[in-house]
Every structure is written in structure tokens, then in C-alpha cells.
Picture (cartoon, rainbow, N blue to C red):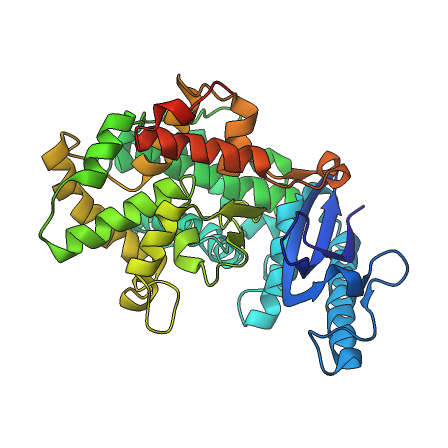
Length: 415
């Protein structure tokens, strides 16, 4: 059974001021939903009533704030009950439940209601796909799914209808051949994985089609071989130090290096940064909704100061309307930089992969669990509730990687 409670975000902060969150638990895994309010730990009653105590200096109208956060908790429990009553809860992950709560149900957004798919014999795949797409919060995921939806619409013909029971192994094989004719095999495989995810959701979560409609028992999605984007530390150093006279390339290089200095932070997460508190960036990863904390080292701070926005933290957030537009512009400029340092297809992802590669190889040689923690991989589990991570191991590891980049070999020791 899923549960919801009010809590303070896990982890240590220097000023002991923490964000108030909805802590959602389900099947031994946890996630958090920020309520956009923070409180000093001394004024939080987390054992008895989960409320802010009298005298808290952060709020003038304490009763109003306590009523607001408790109203959010009540709504979360209402949503969980709705999912339980509709027999959807057990098939959902904790992230699914979190997204359901954050979206306040699709009906409130004026979209298609799940009740519109009541006849399992004639469930319109395209319309259901649109319904599913509206629940996706991550911009990149929504973009990938949206591209697949458009591809299916082109394949069947604009304005045409295809029902779930018409999509069988033979249909998927024909779609695969057609998709390969316009995009690479990796993109084709990704599109097929998206279709598989839509089928799984329709069967296991929304229960609008029966199990025997599932076509992927006979049709196997080709595996995508992950690309190796790790660059040696010498190449990252060359990218950092190369002389550039083009403003767009200078901006792109700073954005690339900022990602490297912030442990390979993703483009969309950097775009969403709105504050640095006590020398750290506290945020939820867009990809996993997992709470995360990164220490801002001097190298990163220098870029924050150099690329400061007028009203926002970074000028990138003011020049570009969204993270996707920013990434496209940065990647175009990075290709020009890459050609000068021997990496003609240089893109933002090289920063993240290269940080991990530098941390894993000698002379540092960090283990996979620590690197995974540093990169923010995976989702929170019930075991995590027994620990209060202070991130010191990750902080130390990042410092070793940056010292290696700076050729401070004497500061680099084996992990």
C-alpha cells in the first residue's frame, strides 16, 4: 500500500534549513514532492503532528502555512485512494504515483479522461498515447515519446485510426522496417521501446486492454548498444584550455565545463538551477525525481559568476526559452570546438560520461557504487530512510577528479 506523509528533505545543510516535502513510499521505494516551503529543523515537529512549531522565523502566518501543507497531504491521500479504488495502485511504481499526484489527475488539466477508454475491443491507440503523453513531466522523455507518436501517425497516415488489438507482431515488424528507412537503428529501437511502454501502461496501470493484446511476447525489441562517450582527462583539459574567439563557442564551452564540474549534471537540471545555498545546489533530478545535492567547487563558482544572469542565476536561462533549445544550441557550438580538439561529434553528454570515466580509472579508481551515487543513478529505496547522507564521499570524489584535471597529481589518492 502506498503511503504519504509530510517530512523534511533528507541530507545535511549548513544552516539546518530544509525543504518541506511530501514523502511518498510504495513497494519499498521512496520519492519526494517538494511543497516549495522550507523550515529550520528546530521548528519542525516530525514525530507527533508533522507541523511547523510556534515561533518559526520563516513564516508570519504559521496557521495558514500549516493548513496549506496539510491540505497537500490530504490531497495526496485522496489521490492514492482513487488509485487503489480503481485497482491501478499495485501496478504502479512510486514514480508513477508521484507523477499522478503532481499532475492532480489528467481530468483537471482538461485532457482525455481514462474513462474515455471503456471499450477494450476498440481502444484507439493514438488517443490513448496522447493521454499517456500528458502525464510525462521530464522534457526529454516527453520529446522522445512525442517523436514516436508522430512517427506512428505518419506510418498509419495522418487522421487514420489504429486500435490496440490491430498492433501485433507482424504490424510491429512492418513498422520497424519503415522506421529504419528514415532513422538510425538506435532510434528505431527506442521508438519500439516507447510502444512497449505504452502497452504496459495500458494493461498494468490503466487496465483498458486485456493481457492477450500484448504483442511483445512474440516480437523482440532490438537492443541498443550504449555509446562510449568517455573522453580522457587530457581531452577535457584541451577543451577547457583551447583559445576561442567566438562568443557562442565560449558560452558552449563554459556550459560543458560547468556540467563536468558539477559531476556531469544533465543539461535540463542545470537549466533549472535557481539558487546556490550554503555552497551547494539542492535539487531533484528531472530524470528520476530523486533528491540530490552537489557541492559547488571553485571551478564551477567561477563560471556561475562569469555567466550570471540579470534576473536569473545563469544567463543561459534568460537567452533560451527551454533546456531543449539550449542543448541544441550548445551542441552545435560544441561540434565546432570538438573539431579543433579531435572530437568532431562533441556533445554535452561527453561531460557526464567523461567525469565518470575519470573517476573510475587510475589514479583515482573509485568503485561503481560511489560513482553511481555521485551521478544520481537509481531511485530511493526503503533502506535509504535509515541513513542521513552528508555527501562527503561524493564531494571528495569530485574534488579528486577536478584536481586530476588541474594536474594536481599529489592530491589524487586511490579510493
